[in-house]
Image 1 (cartoon, rainbow, N blue to C red):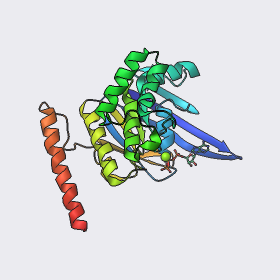
Image 2: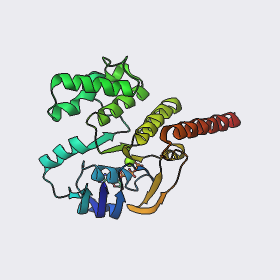
Image 3: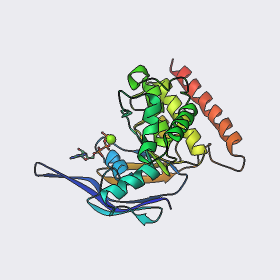
Image 4: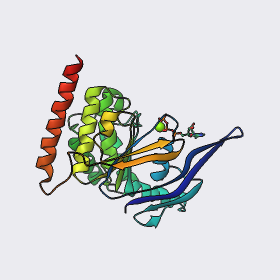
Length: 258
Ligand SMILES: Nc1ncnc2c1ncn2[C@@H]1O[C@H](COP(=O)(O)OP(=O)(O)OP(=O)(O)O)[C@@H](O)[C@H]1O
Ligand SMILES: [Mg+2]
């Protein structure tokens, strides 16, 4: 088991009002899983992501990462572990504005103490992987939303983390850019990465293999399904086939709408 939350609670108190943002949530995620988190606005999805990714601390409960308890770690130790084990993709990209795509991607490596040459090398490789080798010198404002999100994904991947968290990664994108991001996520899943993604969009959730639904801070549904991009001994071929098939399905659906 890669990640496990046991009886996790997050209580916010604001002006005398108490909000149970997470209400006794217990769930486990295995290595290589591709999970989507859905549910109405305010149901605790982002709170869950922040706590599971060690960005925020729970009010109570236990979080185990690779069987080590991380919920009791001190701030600096948590930050170190986070840098090593976690990649996070935000809806608003959260890139440094006056910094090139290359330097944005290289930044986590600086915190990890990687040498300057290797930082540049690895950041270039990551940007290449998301199809941005010709935009490395551009600042975020000189990139489209989809390109900015691809930079953010490259940044999340550069430390080779155990888990990638994404909070509505396609929420601010047009449908074409959203498709690009979906394809990148599918490729990452295919490579064996563990992905936990919040989304409001059913067609984005459709690419995952497990759907967890939150309501009022609780998990109200947790279902695994065998999608056509199941990893098999014949791996990639089958996946590619399945993907082009689903693309056809989408295209014909779009056509049908017109
Ligand atoms: N920092 C905070 N202080 C107080 N209350 C908060 C804070 N962050 C979130 N909340 C509350 O906790 C609850 C869960 O919020 P959360 O952001 O996790 O919802 P969400 O499911 O991600 O919603 P959305 O789909 O709108 O992004 C909400 O009622 C929200 O108002
Ligand atoms: Mg949210």
